[in-house]
Image (cartoon, rainbow over all chains, first blue to last red; front, side):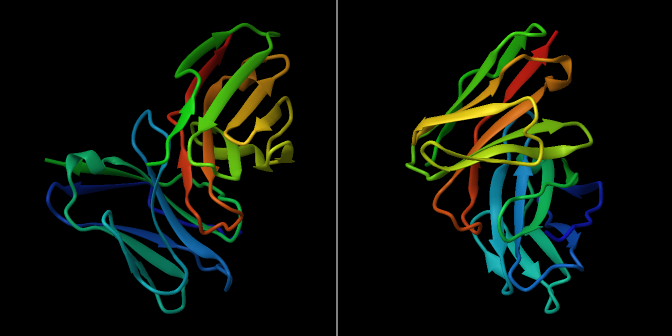
Length: 107
Length: 114
């Protein structure tokens, strides 16, 4: 499975869009991009995934570059409850978890 | 909504004790997983099961065993608990065999071995 690089931490103001980057330059053609988040003292929660096309659901949008070497998770209107560790995972079978990005939403 | 429940949120055991961690899912998922999560190491896969009575080793199976007698229930067993097994244990389930299906996680069990 390809490795990912994420910033260890980010801040975002409440109500603004939070843009979380992920680099995955060694991704192969059949590997998906997944995003999960983990709020303190809870189990991880699935957010979104994609293969080539940009994806949107009720929680977030996923933008994947044309060469698939990087992606961005967008939380359009961040709230305090979005404070969590966000994991970008590249896989075609099992999930391999990195350290993620600790996102802090500030009032 | 899928619900994955774990038998305990917090557990304290002594070295050498046999420990059972239970996980139950209510959505008839074929796949179930056990992870442990440690600071700085992220989530690591211990074992997974893709069907009743079937199991596969993950990345760190040493010191653990599992049991899946019923589809909805996946148990993690520490035969003789050791202090280095103090950790957060997370159970997850997934529908079908395709990796693009999301995993649903339980709330976790924080195990302390004294």
